[in-house]
Length: 410
Image 1 (spheres, rainbow, N blue to C red):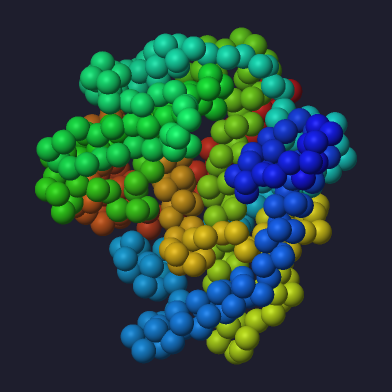
Image 2 (image 1 turned 180 degrees about the horizontal axis):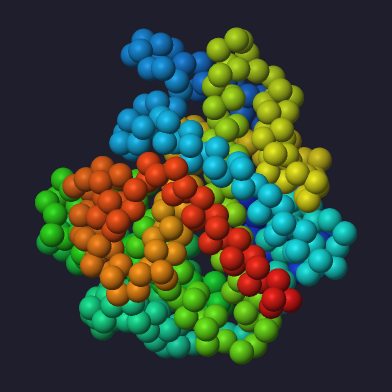
């Protein structure tokens, strides 16, 4: 792709990172190039997806499962009806995402955004933070909730169990490694000084905290079940975001903080439900015969259109957006776990804001339980009933509050 007057080769990750570029043209061309390169391998993707769905369907029939998603639900120890309720409540709140997309269009000076503009930067302040500042802010956020949590997070830095700066040959992204109940966990970062990088430290530190507290368990029960694996990390991000918002006076930084958090929630709740609905339809329709790429693309666009409504235009090449989601192949029906985890944390955080210190003991027991209980029994330790009719809605009520707060910050 041509960038800054020069024709260059890009990896897929590099092209996707350009969705955060300030130029609408670069965002459009980067996403289009990424998707069109996948389209060039359309025969391969069609063969893989059709064969995978056929194989999965035959196994479901042989083993007597009632639906393609049921094996995943059983593995996650979540009833089918709870998963369906989770997704139905999410779909009923698509209007919140559309409301935010319209607000963002106004902030970007556009009549309507395209799906390549969703992560465009708004109100960039350009503020940079040293790593010492980032470390201190992270520790303070956890310490403000519980002094013992602060000491646990501080120990990662004092005991040099954090690989901080990017360098040649180092893996990208960020990661927390919990080894065993006897060995201390470690954190991998690639810190570049941005506001998002501080949130990443808080996120990975939360994973580290979870690993430390669950060391009361045996090796078999040490790791939290998948739907609860993000509990401490996302909760820690919320603690940091709220602390920064309460302290920050710069309107541009406040808008950046709010937009980043709202977009994270949209990506990990609404989008993951879109992916799960698409996946369900793919498997159901494959029962009736081979699916063309045109048909797969049509299903994909229909499910995304339910989320975007009339607030977002999808670029033409987005009909290939299904082709690069590896979860569909390697971890079938994995995606709703993100929705479950994010909404659980938002409900937990809202409960903390309501109850204050009375919430903390139950939350600690939740983290200490590791994988020894089902998700429902684990959440019950913090006074959360995931079968309650209005439970999932509480997370979206919190999202609505953030959107209202953003309106006042514009």
